[in-house]
Image 1: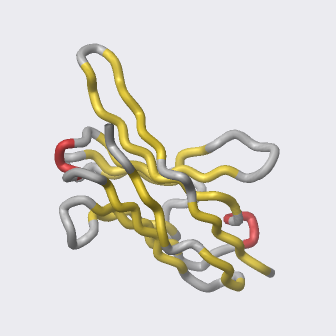
Image 2: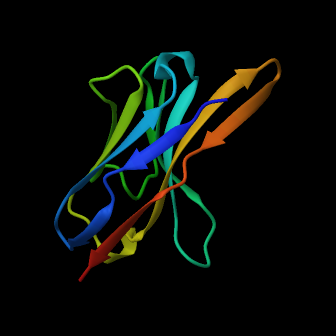
Length: 119
């Protein structure tokens, strides 16, 4: 069981930046993929960015260039740097961990952190 705790959300104005952090209960190098997802009311949760244990990153096409995922200084943190934020970035941001379990995948989710961008 991997426990994930997000932090860093808040209220900012359009054009400002935020840095989210996800603290995992174990080393992220033991987890196949760490990711950030977001959800706005009435819409499905969508992938923002992910990073594998090998360091490969993946981004939602519309967000690449403004958002950057990275491993934190500690071995069990993953950060999401969000620059030039827009009102449409408003939502709840969730940290996700995916681990291979035999031929299946097991996923874990944090409780989410609210990001609100005002115009």
